Image 1 (cartoon, rainbow, N blue to C red):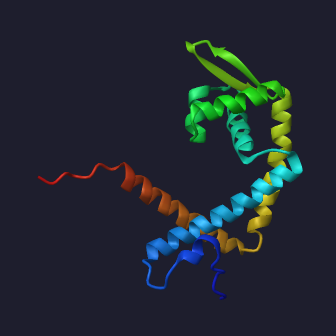
Image 2 (tube, rainbow, N blue to C red):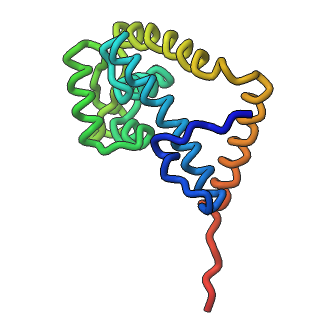
Length: 168
């Protein structure tokens, strides 16, 4: 099997680097390459940023809408970033901003029918792109990679959320 191309982040790897570091940089390189390609295609095909796509995806999953603070948490961005994007999407008619009936201090946002339609058009094409980007890898390898990454994620979740004992 051919050795992977060592460019970008992986170009930093030295032969004597720890395997965990090499693995981390390989994962990061793959993720970054895929993300950059998706960004480029979204911008070209839909005039949409990846952050806008992710924002719309969160609201698409929750037809009743989300509190602005919950949307910020799910997107892992600041409240200010969510507010700015919400303002743009409200002006474009893709999102409605409403008071939260359970908390007068909070606002909820939800997709309008136009916003839902715009997202669904982009999401269908986005899925095709992702399938295309992984198409060169045999199905068995994709299943194995999915399983291995699931095990890694589970191990990380346990390691990062288990309190460590403090030594006296």
